[in-house]
Length: 216
Image 1 (cartoon, rainbow, N blue to C red):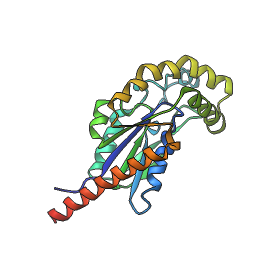
Image 2: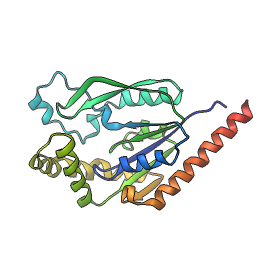
Image 3: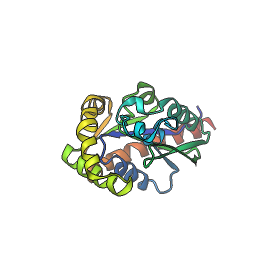
């Protein structure tokens, strides 16, 4: 039995604290090779569209993502092959010309709002996590992030939240909670849940290494 990396999916609504959870898990394995793959990097390219058309796209809908490419990359990483992760430019709403080379790692953390919506993605995951955070905290975090990091105005963020983000969360994201192996309330603030996650991951890694030794 050949050694394979483990893939951990961390899902949840926008501003739920998914990235914080993923980073906390990574920091718990300082001597382990870990790669973080963000679903947001796999938004579809919209080079053929005008800026006005790009701004009208529903980026919280499952069809906004290039899951075919994401799945292809995850399979490559699972087979210990390198990938070239795309870079998405939020200021112009399309992919950048840049790429980020990602080498195969022992642990792959896939983070994103809709990673549990696609059955093909779920089937690639060894552990599925849903970060469950109250809506008032999520909108505040999104306001801070989008105005400071993505060049958005407060009015545009609030309007998008009311007309797109909230209804898409209720329709597509919240229902995926039923696919999670672990639900973490309040994201990165939940130290106990993260510790349990780390213990489980460590147990899986030890089991993989033991089987690899037996084969050798």
